[in-house]
Length: 120
Image 1 (spheres, rainbow, N blue to C red):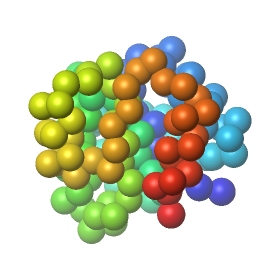
Image 2 (image 1 turned 90 degrees about the horizontal axis):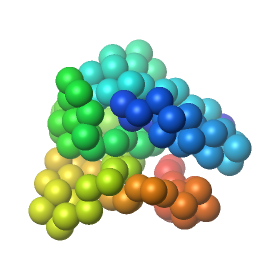
Image 3 (image 1 turned 90 degrees about the vertical axis):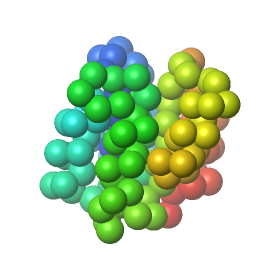
Image 4 (image 1 turned 30 degrees about the vertical axis):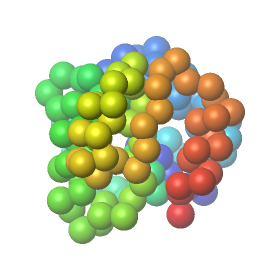
């Protein structure tokens, strides 16, 4: 079973994402922001990280950058799921090492399809 770290500061969004992923057969660990996600990522390996962009303490691009510094997350797919849709923001995500960019509100079927394409 693939494990996914789902990061979002909105409890309702985290719940929807976790429900979608668990229903599709993934093991899900939730984090409330980028800092919480980093702490969890140090303790456990994940097959994919799905993160929001706008969060307190550490945003999605900052989290992506920090994860990419760690050898264990060099090739782990990192998807940013956010309301941000500007090309500038997407380029910043790619520059930080994000694998993909998805815009909220998300389509559960499409989210699972994208994850299926990038997960090892």
